[in-house]
Amino acid sequence: MNTMRRPIIAGNWKMNKSNFEAIDLVTLLKRDLNDVNDVDIVVCPPFTALSDVKDVLTDSNIMLGAQNLYWEDAGAFTGEISASMLKEVGAQFVIIGHSERRQYFAETNDSVNKRIKAALKWNLTPIVCVGENLHERENNRTFDVVRDHCEGAFDGFSEEEIEKIIIAYEPVWAIGTGKTATPQQAQEVHRFIRELLMRMYNEELARDIRIQYGGSVKPENITELMAQPDIDGALVGGASLSHESFVKIVKNACAIRT
Ligand code: 13P
Image (cartoon, rainbow, N blue to C red):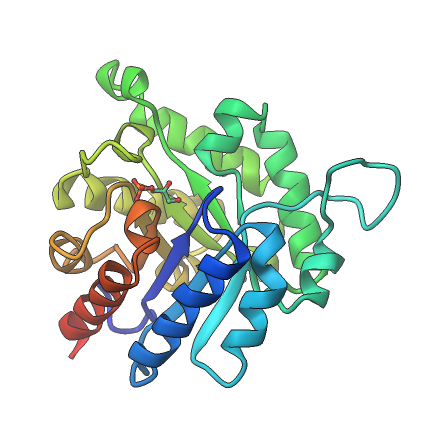
């Protein structure tokens, strides 16, 4: 972790939690994380719970994110949700291009690019996910895939726009499998992304951009991950669904900073 970049821990709840469960969870998070000042904390509930969660989060240090958006502002797009709608319910962040969306919902670099554009237009901070699957890793294609995801996602964006985004490196083989990338494996790819951004943009931008790691992050492994110089936080799936484990992850991330 680099002390210039503010750490950010986000919980991606995926398709979990009824509204009642969501309210219970954030009520406890708000109570137990209210003394955390030096880490950004974000929860990303399903669309249906955003509004109720936002109500609970009023006057708290926890911010709200969504898990996806559609790039048009409004229109005949049955089943979709626009950036302006997310803004209106109080979201500040939005996850874009998660591997589950790429895998099950035909998300491509091109659609990721359009979604980032829409998020930035509405002043939402995109958390852009990149990462290789097991087959690609085993065939030594990790860097090629991550480069392709970054170049495709950021195609046509200015430095001012890219400065506003957060990147999440999520190796697909580590998601929901209990198999975390080792801190060294994660660090190597985070460093690669920073060097890529240096070539695509400039040194300052590459130095300042925040890169989260995601994939089986737990209270037991967050400390070692956060100790890496290029890891600035975590995008947490399963362990963000329980208040005890998410609180521990945030507190352990704080501890390493102090
Ligand atoms: P897990 O933490 O459940 O592996 O999920 C990671 C993830 O996909 C976060 O976006």
